[in-house]
Length: 88
Image (cartoon, rainbow, N blue to C red; front, side):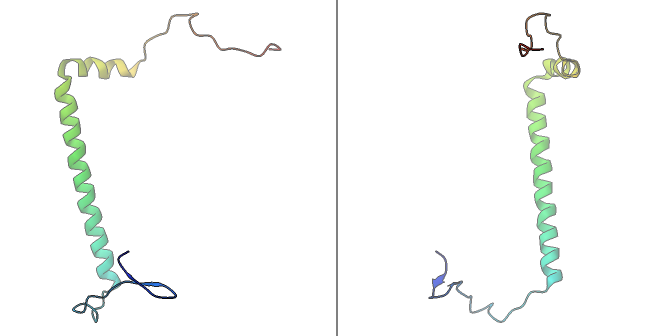
């Protein structure tokens, strides 16, 4: 536990240097927005890296696989049938 336990609640230790400082709501909102933008940037960077790796793994097959993904292969007739209830 990172706090000091009292009878009624847990108290966080206070840094003596920052004990009297106050932080405005606007500052908190700006910091959260800045952090959110940083995280979104990291996610976009990682996604582009994954896309590059996947494109490098299957360069020739990737084009045909993408084209083939648009229309699923036709299943042979009669191989899969839906089981029905006896009264239908």
